[in-house]
Image 1 (tube, rainbow, N blue to C red):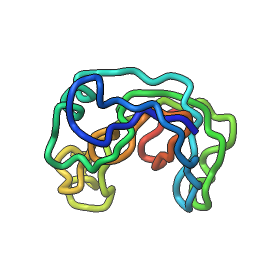
Image 2 (image 1 turned 45 degrees about the vertical axis):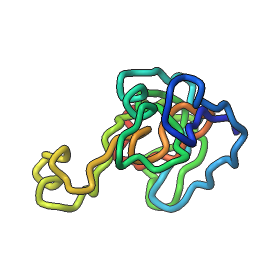
Image 3 (image 1 turned 180 degrees about the vertical axis):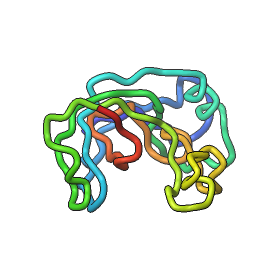
Image 4 (image 1 turned 90 degrees about the horizontal axis):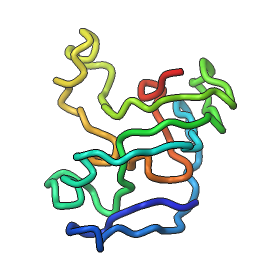
Length: 132
């Protein structure tokens, strides 16, 4: 599949449109074929250098697409479902998450900053990160 990734920090010259392996859909996740991804200020900040960003990384926190595979344990989704991606990631089990305050989770992250994002052909998504 094709994806926009960075391997180092810098200006627009560090963006790479690359061929990388398509993700394999594990249990509890879904595979989404990205139909639309946008750019926002976070992409610029990540590219300029944020300390907890693992490199290389696929940029993009905003996007939408169509479910193409459903892992075991994610049966509330079906192939063909159209989804919008919610970019905040969190554990879902800590005190903050169980009270609906996911942004306080110690594992809180953002797609395209702390894990691969939406600027690709296919992305793995946790079921917490998609809405119909």
